[in-house]
Image 1 (spheres, rainbow, N blue to C red):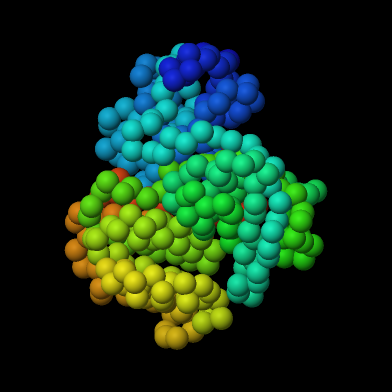
Image 2 (tube, rainbow, N blue to C red):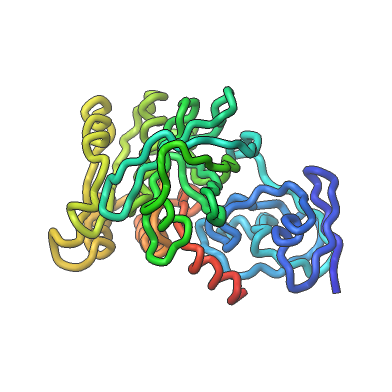
Length: 339
C-alpha cells in the first residue's frame, strides 16, 4: 500500500510506500526536500503536518520536542504516512541558502591532531559558498562515497576548511588521512544543516565540542565574534588526551580579543573518569541555571545525547539546543536498518 504526500512548498506529490519515510521517497523521486542526517537527529527536515497522519520512528528530543509534536510538527526523515498527507518544511528559524553542487580543489592539508586532518578547499566557481556558521556540506573525494563534514571557516570565506577525523575502516576518512593530496578534485553539495548560529537570539551561549566537532563550533564562535555578539559565551572542548586538543592557539586568540568568550578544555586523562564524565561534572558545577541560554553542540552521538540531557536538566529549553551529532557511515546504516 502507498499514500500520496503533497509537498506544499513545491506543490510536488510523492507516492510513499507504507514502509518508507517521506525523505526516502523524496530522494528516490528527485524532489528537493531539505534533509541531513536521515536518522532523526539534526532537525533539518522538520516540517509541519498540514493534513493526514504519520507514524514517527525513534528520534532525539532536541530534533523534535514533545511541544513540537503537539503543535503539528514532524521529522520527514522519520515519518511514515498512514494516510494521504500534506506537509511543508519549515523556513522560519533556519538558514535559507540555496543548495549548490560545486567542484573544488584541495589547496592544503594539515594533520592537526593524531586522528584529525584539516582540509582546505577552493571552489572553482568565482562565487563563494553562502552558508550560516555551523552548517555542513557533503564532500565526495576521488573514488570515495559522499560524506558529510562541517565547515570550520567563516561564511563568505574564499576557501572552505573542514576537519576530518580518521575513522578506522572508514573509506572516505582513510583516503583523506593516507592518500588525499593538494590539487585533488572534490565534489561539494551544500550547505546543509540547522545547527547554525542564531544571531538574533541574545541569551548566553554554551558551546560544547568533541573531537572534530570543534569545526562547526569554531565557525559559530568566529561568526559571533565578527558580529560582536556581547552575551556570555562558554566553550567546552572535550578530548581524550591533551594531544587531541587542537587549534587552541586560535581559540586563545579569540578569547583574548573577545573577553565574553570563556574557554574550558576537558581532557579525560587529567582527572578521574572519561572525558564525558569529567564534562558532566564541570557542566553541572559551572552552569547551574540555563534558563534563557542557547546551546550549540557538535561531536559523537554519545557526547551530544549526554550533554543535551545534562543541559536540559539544568534548565535549558530543548528548542534552544542546536546539535549536530557526527555519525559514522556504519552507525547511520545500523540505525536505518533497524528502522
